[in-house]
Length: 284
Image (tube, helix red, strand yellow):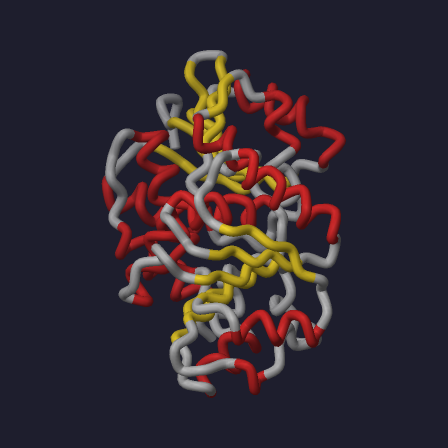
């Protein structure tokens, strides 16, 4: 690092779990760029002042994670159409004194899903667990790509209905329904779905209760868990045992990060290098 080093980072609360610095700094080193990416703990009450400080300190940009993805929209100068449609920001680009809000989560998710499942989502029936910032990005990307039916289940029905209304107002072509967060309803909905996506935090801890019954999975199912640590959650283990295609959130993390990296630096990052840095960090 020197006086010419350009700064990147990620803000969240908490932030110590984030692996983004590992993959971004690995890409920076591989390309020989004079950048440095750092994790920054930012409490919600300090969000505006922290972002102002990053601008004053000459940051080129930063990622945004829980719980700031939606709240930061209020202090962004300009949103890309994608971020505005999704209603959440995961990447901020600083152009002089202006903050440009992007969302790369949806495109990162789709690229990973198609790469690992070898199938298009067009015409598919999807069960989405969760309605937070990441779930919103996934939902809009799926709708944009032409899924036939989208079922949304969330512990807060109000939040799930809010996402469904937002999707319908956006003139999407797919059917959108909301489910109660109950075992019987969820398990039945799996049988009516082709793709099951967990966009909640349930599964990060070994003590978390199972999301679904093991008996509901079939070989035709694609089960995608946005969680990447642990690399194989209980949900994915259940899916694998049933012969279904099980996909962890590692690919989404890599590809959404690669898109952010390109926004900030104008360079395509070495995706393989980023993925390997993450694998080394999460595989026991």
